[in-house]
Length: 169
Image 1 (cartoon, rainbow, N blue to C red):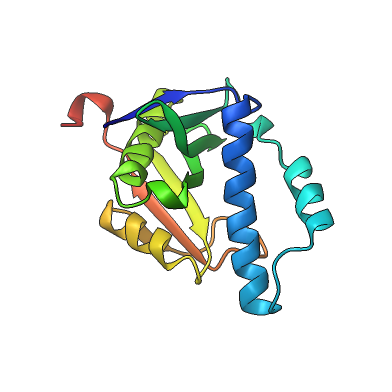
Image 2: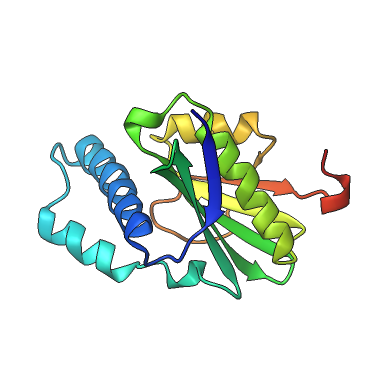
């Protein structure tokens, strides 16, 4: 069984299902940690609808969907913040598919997509409780930096310089 990763419209059924799973997990984690209960279902629906992913559509963004043995199992998105800087977002692998190398493959594909958009660097933010994500980014060569945005939930910011495509081995 293998992973395949390809661009996909942000509003495709597979992308929408992965976005719902991603947002539910990170929102519930935050609420359980800080409020002692999962996300209110109405709030969850409002937030999912408010962030459909239009910023991950060409020409300034890309959404990638990873399929494991043909089944949608993960995603990663990039969007240009500036002509030479892309932001990595929505990196997610379904819980039952974790530990099979998909996250690193999704991030590598997102880096390639960022290069194709003209980016020379990629940035991201994450939260303290998402320890697995922070470990992944560090393992993949991202360096923790100062803030590049004012997202109220961001607690850690990372950056990676992208080598030109011809220098990638």
